[in-house]
Length: 251
Image (tube, rainbow, N blue to C red; front, side, top):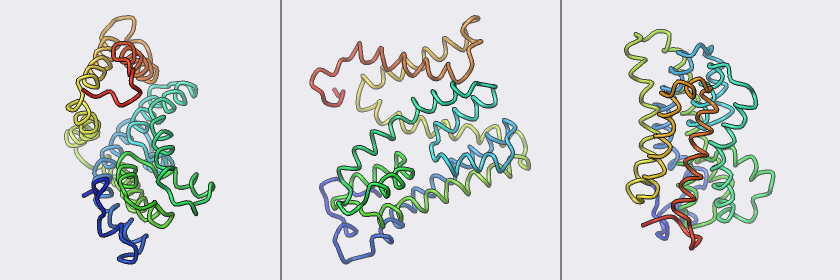
C-alpha cells in the first residue's frame, strides 16, 4: 500500500531499513500487477505477428503500457515512422510532467546524469509511490523501486509472447482484453472525482467511435486516429472547462 502524503511511514524514518530495501518492498506489489498486465501485451504482440524477442525488446526499452499498445498497433497497421513518433510523443508526454514534479522531491545529491537515467523508470505507479514519500527520494530508493516492476514487466511480456502461440485462440483473445481493463482502471478514479474529466473521456470515446464507423474517416490509420481523438478531446475540454484558477479541474 502506498504511503499517504504527509504521513511518515516506517520506511521514511532513517536508519530503519536500507533505501534499496525500501524501494524493493514498495516495488513488489507493482511488479506483480505489471507481470499480468504485460502478459496480455505479450499475447497482443504475438497476435499481431511480432516475434517473441521483438515484443520483449519493446517492453525492455519502453516501459509504457498505453504507448506500447498504440505503437505495436500502428506498426502492425503499416503506419509511418512520423505517425508512430507523434503518437508516442502525445501518449507519453505525461511522463515529462511526472519527471518535473518528482525532481522537486529528489535528494540534492542526485546528479543530473542519474536523474536522466532514473527518468527511464518513471511510470504512473512508480511515480505515485516516489512522489508520496515524505523524505527526499534517493538514488538507491528509486533504483530499488523500479527494479522489480521492470523485471515484472519484462518477464510478463516474455511469458505472454511465448505462450501466445501455445494457448488456445479463445483464451488469448479474452486475455488481451485485460490490458484495456487496466486503462479503464486508470481513468475511472479520475472520472469519478471530476465530471469534467468524465466529459473529456466521453468526448474522446465519441470521436474515436465516429472515426471508426464513419465511411470516410475509418480509412484513417490507427495511429492518427489515436492522435486526433486525444488532441481533439483535450482541446474541447480546455475550451469547455477553462482552468481559470490555474489549479486542478475539480468540482
